[in-house]
Image (cartoon, rainbow, N blue to C red; front, side):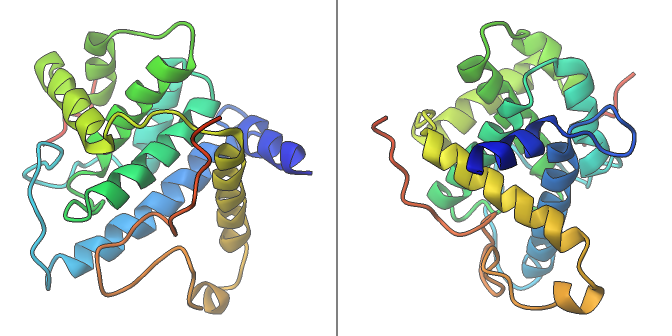
Amino acid sequence: MAEAETNTIINDKDDQETVPKIITFLSSLLQRVAESNDHCRLFQSQKISVFHGLTRPTISIKSYLERIFKYANCSPSCFVVAYVYLDRFVQMQPSLPINSYNVHRLLITSVLVSAKFMDDMYYNNAYYAKVGGISTVEMNLLEVDFLFGLGFQLNVAPTTFHTYCTFLQREMCMQIQSPLQQLLPQPSFNIGRPLKIHCCFNEDESSHHHQLA
């Protein structure tokens, strides 16, 4: 059953019949996290990093993810692994919660690192920089900062991969719930402090362009 759910998340297409559902689900999840942390930002000091832009990018998270999917030509599984990396990053860097000012740079960097780790063939940093609307120098800097932020913990166990797919499946269910149901407390979020993408897991790790501001 877990295998079937994973294949559904990765291979099923949205209404446009071109983009895997994972893009829709992940963008929806990140949008909620970014907006919530934008609100927290008004009351809590948050560290500024190389991932932060001076202003919010005009391109939406969903459009940005669709752009990455269209031009990066990485496997859909890379987006699940990028999701894992993003969650690890915010767990290990609690002073750098995902918000509207850094989510785009975090996304292009996490997909780049995921593609290099997962796929046999991938584009170089200069190409990803063009896709992401940033300079090659900045792309190189973001990659190094992201890797150190992760502590170079790039391996993703199969059980971890399936668990994150399950959370994306839940995102699909939330999208079809009534507005009232969506207001119910969700274990993926912890309002009142820097938000993680969802709860931490105990992993078995042994096994042109829209220019960003």
